[in-house]
Length: 367
Figure 1 (spheres, rainbow, N blue to C red):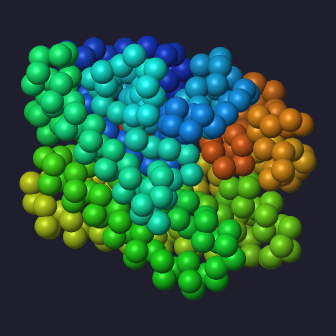
Figure 2 (cartoon, rainbow, N blue to C red):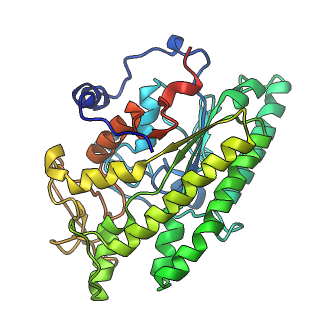
Figure 3 (cartoon, rainbow, N blue to C red):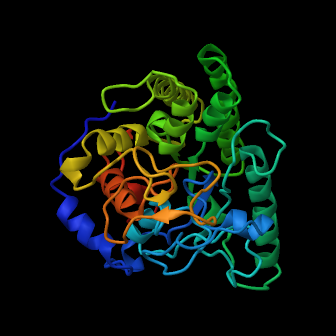
């Protein structure tokens, strides 16, 4: 596993992310950054709203965008901050028919609530990949017809393919009251679906992959509030649910093993595994070190301490309560992270210290 570095880059990176325009220029890259992202709410930049019309209301988006953009956060997500590090635009949701975009820097297929199984239910990973296949075929068709400046075949080959999914597969299993043993038995099926997605994209010419593992599920205020209602006592020293986190770690072990196998099978591909779990768990267990308070309490929710989460009164719904905009909290709504937390996570991802093999995020486009 990659070694994890200290905080030496944090002051610079925090200053960098505090402003919206990036300081680098596109001329630094050998090829223009093109990213295709597949995932769930952790990286959905508006797919749920665009695809289903599902309302995501303020105060979501209050910190950076000053309006709701369909992101489940007060501001930018990890994927937004990674895009900014390349001086490329935020990824548009594939389903946004009013985006006024030709998706020249890629597209985002992630949608809130997505999982890998069942595989033919919108918007499972399998469906997202099918959407990409349609997107690619149509894009190349329009480009060949001379109807616009679209991503060409070389652009698809040089693109970065990001996959960040699996959290909902675990969470939904626990929500259905499956035993820990049953949840664990499902993990190989989930990993197989992720591997199948990578192989499909590889067969389409993709050669550069960026794989996020899943975070500490047992530290989410939503899960903690539900377990509290069930009067379960399964908490670790930091107050997180041990069994949920154990399942997440087993999932991550299976994912990194799958990445190793795929590297042997697809020798000309670069498959980077990123340890998001360690970054997030460190942020929660050492919250004070990073200037955060109440890491297991939602900023936006209902009910007050210890978790400020009530499944009947979620963030943005009538009756919700929200912390002050200047408050530094890890959890935004009990499931998703605040922009302040995402900034710390992004800064650590960009060090390359949590990547296996150790790789900088801009590897796919730098000169």
